[in-house]
Image 1 (cartoon, rainbow, N blue to C red):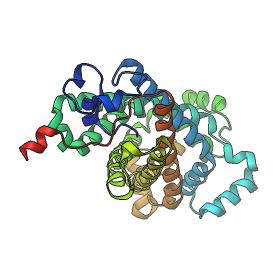
Image 2 (cartoon, rainbow, N blue to C red; image 1 turned 90 degrees about the horizontal axis):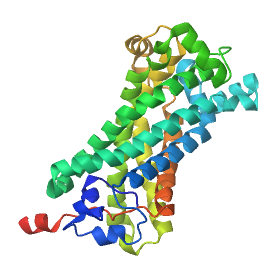
Image 3 (cartoon, helix red, strand yellow; image 1 turned 180 degrees about the vertical axis):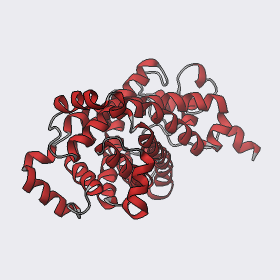
Image 4 (spheres, rainbow, N blue to C red; image 1 turned 90 degrees about the vertical axis):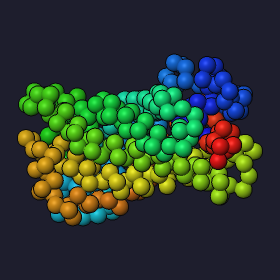
Length: 334
């Protein structure tokens, strides 16, 4: 399974921090790299790059329709009709518009999101200590993922701005090569970074839900649903649990991040606009336009991201500790 937090970070490492940790052998028996090592963290970043870059690019057509529903709800009234209008206006090739900035932006974001998540959860777990890291593991997941996403969004913001401008402003530009220089020439750096604050508003709650909900859902599935212990499950069965937990987490992610996503879409379309002005313009009902499309997109996307990320860990034989259990010292004390 994907490593489920800083508590397991303390128990999974094969040197130093592993001293006295009961899961050391289980975590490192088949490991090709030491938990928490530089190579381990870089490979986690590679897994994040592949999972985010590939999946976001794969759902570009749905993302395009979703963005257009947000910025022009009068013309794009629903998912199916939105696809029909897009094909009629731009042809089938129009559904792929914005794929290049999507691939580049989300690949960079995935590198920092997953890589730094591993870094922060190890560090925060060290600060808390073994018992508190277990007792406060949900808070640990939330803090580590929020910290990682803060930096990841700085790398995503330029390409996200270009992508939205290509997808939603007709006649502006069709490619990354045409859009990026024009945006910079007309509006300067503000054009590509004005959306970073609302991007934080969208992505940080999304990522906190993505990681914390996933980790706790995995625990629940092995405890209440899977009929045998995780240690007796094959890698294929564990990856299946990963996919199911990822989809469940994705549904919650879509709901908590959708209002900010609507603001980002409109903000990056309109020159000189601000987040507060867009929010006032959209109103309460407007920020929820396109929610169903986003649930389908984010649910599938999140499940596939976790599946790809965990598959990379399997391929490189990275440490994959079991779901967390109370340390012996805590059990005895209670």
